[in-house]
Image (cartoon, rainbow, N blue to C red):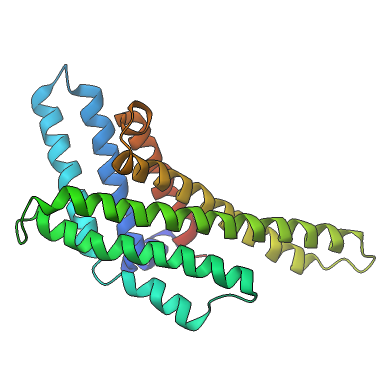
Amino acid sequence: MNDTVDKLVIFLAKRDGIDKLVKTFQYVSKLVNWRVEKTRPEFAHRAKQWEVASGLSRKAFRTGRFLTGFNALRRSPGPTPAFRLLAVLANSGEMVYFFFDHILWLSRVGVLDAKLARRMSFVSAFGESVGYVFFVISDLILISRGIRAERKLAKEKDENEEEMKKIRADRVMRLMAVAANIADLIIALADIEPNPFCCHAVTLGISGLVSAWAGWYRNWPS
């Protein structure tokens, strides 16, 4: 049986695993920068550099990630027309996000014109937001169905405990996905429509950590 170190090695071998670790670095450093910006400016500057480096590293790790959404639509678009429509909208938004995020990364590291960065950031964040909205809707529908199925099983005389455990485990994973997607949606809104709430360092920091730690939970080996 794998111990914690074995599981950590497996987790970090995954692209999503290392992304969630670096995302934790990114948003912890953002909160540190906000906390000590006025009292320890030199330390705050170092935290800011760590935040920026982590963000750029995550963009590099995500190279080619837009193909994930395309493959999901190609292989398993959904069991019903309604779910297929939700899958098309969600994955199309995600593909736009990751594709233009590549261009944003290249503009920020100096390969492409730096003037492209703001425009690419907006397009990427808009696609990201669209994807998150429809992923959340899909998960909430499936959570609702799972609750109804669990209640039905509970009323039956021959209660299937294993089936109920599977439904509960699936519900927890979907709730983690909903939490992560809503947190990331808040971050994306800060790029699309800057406002004091979404753009505040604490809001961004907490949202980023919620998303990262929900991802840790979902990707941690069982």
